[in-house]
Image 1 (spheres, rainbow, N blue to C red):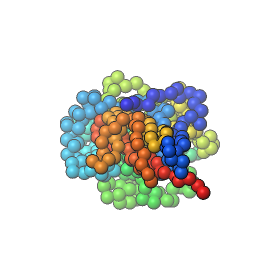
Image 2: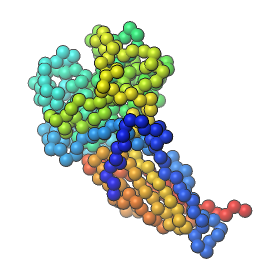
Image 3: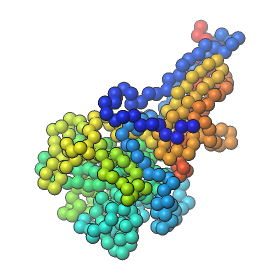
Image 4: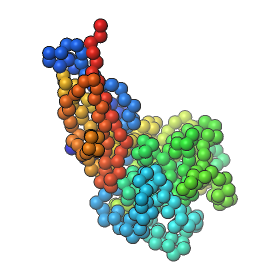
Length: 382
């Protein structure tokens, strides 16, 4: 079993090599039966996109993971809650309730423990501190989370905000979760990624976007004073976005080194400037910037399975692949429930059809989206 997909070089990657979907190789009919053959049917699985850029992730075996959860009694926050998205909202809400907002905070070490301990004494913090804490908290439960920076990035608009995106298996997508404001954004009832938000803001100012605060997702326009929090809580802040490449800040502390940052480039970014503190944002044109026009490289898919299927008579070979940080195993659905399985299976096929279901599970016990393989018997055409 392969625990991880290896990382290819970032530079000069051909876009066509990003994702190679497994294609069935149709076979001749089983021996003695010339009336048909087994063929793979199309199934609407979550799209698999390889991880080409984000080269580090938090380490399950780090003692800091267990210490964070035990010291702040985080398991009690999600006790008896099995829904993944609801658990994420509970953890986000806990941070918002335990850390006060102060955009001019007292100096403190850039570490979740130091920030939370200082917050317990009544000290407040800005967006960067909130994103550090939420990054540590969500990753400590096995939810793949990364830090990002964003800004309004249009002529005459100056600003910057730091927050997080988390991969939500329930939705098979990245979702912005902002602990500072205890909020996320939705469109038609579906939580949005940073690039989702950006698309809608550039299109029409974000008319279809709903601001969802707290555990009940209520929408409000007066939660934060605009003279203090002008851009941070709004969708308008997401015209420019950068993502930290290394997502192992928490378990690699204090040895963490500054991370390169991915910048998405398109027609809008070529015609506008991201202004921060009265001048062009330092990341633009710096040695830390990795610029890409390929949004699939940014919105890669943790925990999602890619399969390669080969058929030989009444035998099917299914090879599974994924990029699952802290992968424990692949699992296959059976009459007994979900059971661990190999990443390379040889299965006897039955008429009239065969449906196989697989998923990943990481060391934290978080399961990925279900991936199905359908192989049907196709009778000879008349």
